[in-house]
Length: 97
Image (cartoon, rainbow, N blue to C red; front, top):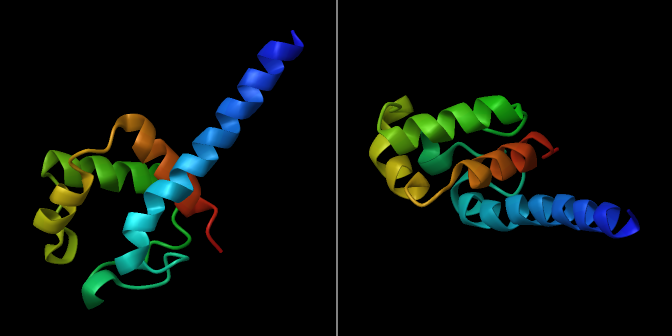
């Protein structure tokens, strides 16, 4: 039982670390805390809830979202993200302050 708890704890820590690691690519445009309008165009994502982030990422990946003309750029940025990656990013961005 202790092993299972340790594995679950490690999995939770890795998920949190993955969101932070994945966000490094985003930070160049969105800022370390999501405080910037990427390329002077996008919405500021800091303060968004996890579900809103995931919905936006899925929309960009599917080519169905083009907020402020950022659709093509973000489609490329999201192309390799799995659902798990998007959830990890959503959770990370929701925790930015």
